[in-house]
Amino acid sequence: MLTKENKIEFVTPIISTEEELKTLLDYFKSKSTFILADENTVKLISVIADISPMIKDAEIIEIKSGEKNKNLEVCHNIWQYLSNNQVNKKALIINLGGGVITDLGGFVASTYKRGIDFLNIPTTLLAMTDAAIGGKTGVDLDNFKNQVGMISSPIGIYYNSHFLSTLPKNELISGFAEVLKHGLVKSKSYWKKCTNISFDDLNWEDVILGSVEIKCAVVKRDPYEKGERKLLNFGHTIGHAIETFMMNQSTPIMHGEAVAIGIICESYISTKIAKLSKVELEEITINISKLFPKIELNKSTFSNLIELMKNDKKNISNEINFSLLDSIGKGIYNQNCSEEMILESLSYYTES
Ligand code: GLY
Image (cartoon, rainbow, N blue to C red; front, side):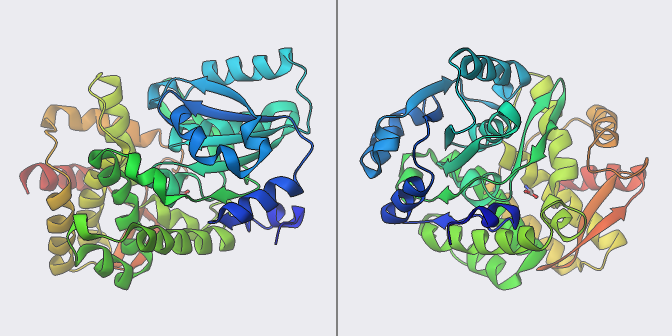
């Protein structure tokens, strides 16, 4: 299982036991090891320290948490630190944290000396079910999310559901938006499993496994997002614009909250230019609204959101590119829609 070829084929080992993690680290031994963490996740190192001396003896690089720190300046500081300390290509970076840590840490590792190994240990639901899987790494640039980055696979992803118990509920709910997205674009039964039970009664190990299976299967078939992987952008064209806009207004909202709005709007668009039925739109809107309280979006901001969407890196030519739904569990990609339709969908959200 643990071969270099895995990296090339994007079959990243998914590790769920301490023994497997130890085996993986032994395989990649004799390296200087760094743990990249933030002020919250640095406290979690003790949970994994005894698994391997490579973790216990690792040098810790601590950065500040939060999307606003996912930038090139922070990368520069880490590259400089590694370089000043003559860290060579045999080093390993362990990214311990949420999506900011796995995105930024993966990018730093993949570019330092043209690439050193990295391992992801996601600690949030969002990172476990989405960000840490599939090799997307990168940082934000000025006002644009994930504008600079590359696809580069970690040597493995280690899951420890204990970390979920350290999370505040709003963090769990935020990550759940990506879980619901996986059901919406790929599996009606997974969507039903996740929505036919109250949030507090969900079995998180099952939820994570379901999402990991869906996402890994898609990424394995289309690692570079030439086709099918675009489905995973459902909810994100409008969601990213809202997230960026709120961040620029200094009233940031969580990624999952923005994606939840994007899911409602893009489901509305799906009833107009794809085959989603009104009944399923209502089912989606009710289930999302149960978990994600309404965020006030003033109509005067809609034109700013459209401008942000026009700059989205997912666009091909000058059209705003969408992934939509033909039904729950059946996503479609490479769909364009008019600005009027996008505005209509934002009104649907604010008025629903
Ligand atoms: N977050 C969507 C993807 O990894 O493709």
